[in-house]
Length: 211
Image (cartoon, rainbow, N blue to C red; front, side, top):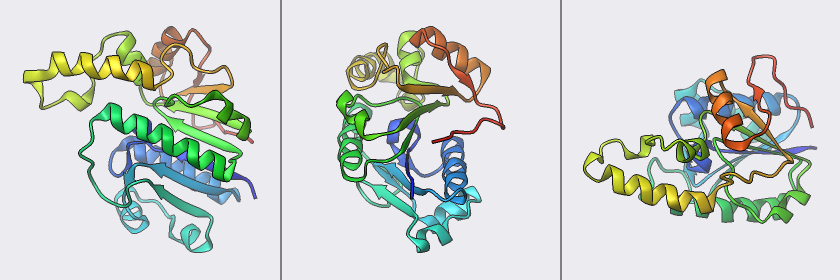
């Protein structure tokens, strides 16, 4: 049975609320319905019962069948009090461990790909980045990130500090060529192509990922 990893939005931060999570869960359910074993990977997240209730998913039967696995590094919870760059570093370490353990056929990252030892990709048949809007583009164009909302007093300093850290923790300008790039909109596609100087696929309803 083929195996797929789906890394949560915001570079694997959490499987809780939000439109990005809903999209990732739709991908998971589609892959499960096509017979794959799927791992939801994040630092934290909700249990399947709450995911189903909030996002309208139907994942419980796959969990019972052992084809859905919740790989939450810190277990089921709603919030982490961890600075975002540290969270990204922890996601990178966690993904590397899981790839070595399971050798998935497919990995789908959301928003950005955390820096991995590129030898890790030899364990994976196909790697996809599906981006709602990448942090790499926010850094490149100096766009204030949503994580700063509510911290206006320290926004300028903290944004620069986070962005300088993230440059070293994600594939900022040197994203590996083997990673297929997919955008959730034409606007995001444009920003991704300017940032990474590579063709990016449009995320259309008919777009299907084959492995």
